[in-house]
Image 1 (cartoon, rainbow, N blue to C red):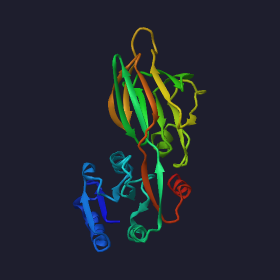
Image 2 (image 1 turned 30 degrees about the vertical axis):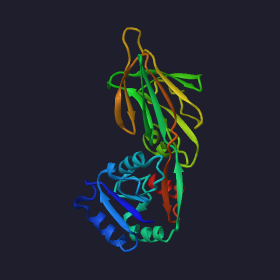
Image 3 (image 1 turned 90 degrees about the vertical axis):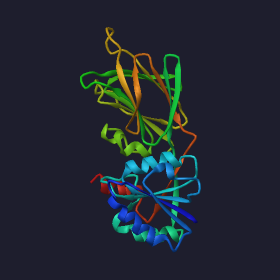
Image 4 (image 1 turned 180 degrees about the vertical axis):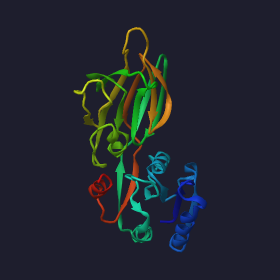
Length: 272
């Protein structure tokens, strides 16, 4: 282990006090310790990225390192913190375990999506948590047909449709009443957001499948207007006739696990 990057959130570590403290703790143990608040500065020289922040900062780092074989260790400066591995009181202990090689690496999947609009096709990704097609206006729903490997599943009149990874199952998917998956599972979740019918339930499918969403018309008199979001970020707007093809990304990302706290321990504590 020669090069460690410390990525910190400016809002949660003002003055980078904890980042500086962590760098001092590590500087005699590794060749290079670099501190940054910009994910773009994580280069291929890095052996490990330590992320000081919440789940949002971890997601940014995961997008940057996906497919590059650079593992991430998250230190929780947020609130819920499902993606962060270490709570702040255990920071020094976790660093000792890391330096001594007492850790494991979990490889996790991400998503990619092709957006089909008229004659234009563009690809977005990787997406770490979820891809969402949802209504633009508060007072209107959208009608979306769902296909899995070109097999018609159902048509949903809802606030939107959410496609989640196992990592993202504890994020927006959980708030939308979707199931929680263990992060090492190879599966995807299709979750309707506030469906008009109570019979519409989430569906879990293999990660090897291709999911296609098509925006229909809720009312014949006008086109449905939707927003496209990936990990909460607006990717564009869509309307009736537009389609989205979602599949597992070829680029994975690695998370470091230290200590004896399992995913199920974390889930039990954080969800009360």
